[in-house]
Length: 446
Image 1: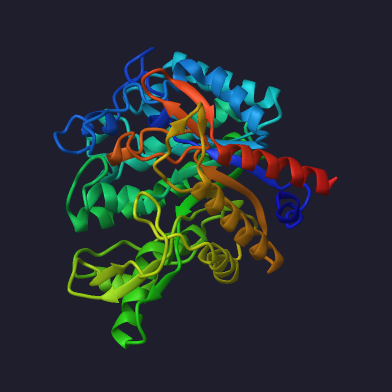
Image 2: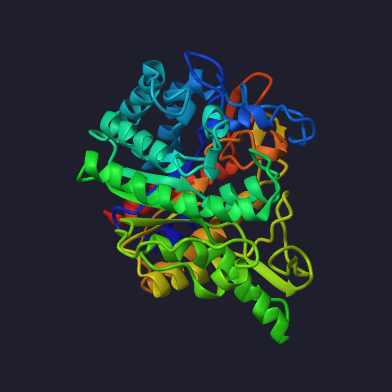
C-alpha cells in the first residue's frame, strides 16, 4: 500500500514534520531567554485546560540531539521549526541573546549533517512579553520590531537556511488571541483583532523584505490555516454565511499575501467595527505558500458573533479527539482552489495531522486512526498533484506530542509519543508507517 501511494509523488518531494518553539522547547527562563506572552497567559487561572505551562513540555532545548536522531530514524527530508523570539531577543528589540542564537545554530548544523532541510518559521505565536507590554500586535511599531528580528535571524542562519516562513496562521494570532481570547494574550475584542490582522500583514511584508535584503537567495513564504467553507444547506442564507466564512478565513489573509487589496465584501462587513487602511498592491508574492489544513468548515447562518455564522458538525462523519471532522477530500479541493485562485509558485502542506487519545501498551503506541488519517490525506495530496497543483512538500503536524496550547498536554498529535514524566520518546505506529512511505517514495522515484 505504501508503495502504491508513494508512486503519486515526484522525485525530490519533501517529506517532513513540523513543531513550534513554545510547544516543545521548555527551558522557559534559561540561558537568558525572556518571557513570552504564552509564559504569561499560561499563568492566568483557567486559561489552560490542564492548568499546565510550557515551562518544560518536551524539554527539547536540552534533548534536541535525541530529537534530531528521531528525525533521522523516521527518514525525514525536512523539518519545520520556529524560533522563539524572546529566546534570541529577550526584550523583543535591542540586546541580542547569543546563547539563544547558539541553540538554533547548533540545531541547524545538526539537521544539515543528517540531510534534513530546515524550514524556519519566525513567528509561531510566542511574542516577547516586553513587546506585549508596549501594545504587542496592536502597536504600529511592532512592524519595525518584526523586521529587525527577521533581519537578525536571516543574517545569523541564512548562510545555511534557505527556506523561511514569516508568520504561522495569522488568523489564529489575530482572532484566537484578540477576539475569542482562548490564546495569548487573551484579549476579547473584535475591533482589536481586526487591527491586529492588518499589522500582521504589514509585518509579513516587512519581514519578507528584511530576509531578502539580508539573503537575496532566500525563499520566503508564510503558513496560512485554510479550509474549504461549505454551506450547510441550499438555503441562500447558508450560502452567504459560507462566503463570509471564506472571506474571513481564506481570502482576508491570502489576497494581500499575493499583492491584492483586502476583499471588498469583507471590508464592507468589517466597516461596522473599524476602517482598515488600504494596503499597497506592490507586495512581492511568496516564493511558496504554506497551507495548514485540518478540517473543512460547514456553515449555517445564525445571529452568532460578528460573522453571523455557526459551524456545523455533519452527522455520520468521523472526528478526532479535538472534535474536528476528518474530511480528507477537502485537502485536495483546497489545494486545487488555492492554485486556481492565487496561482502560487509552489505550495507546501506545512501542517496536517490529527489528535487522538494514544496509549502505551507493551512499550508500543498503536494509533491506527492517525495512520488512516495520514494515509487518506496524503492520498488527497497526491490527487491534487495529479490535478496540476505545484505541491512540493508535506509536513505532518507534529513530530512529537507536545504542549497543545490551551489544551496543555492532554491532546496528542505526534508521530512520536512523549512520556512527560520521564521524557521518554517512542515512535508510534503512525510514525513507522510514515517512515515506510518515505522510504517507498524515494525508492520508486530513483
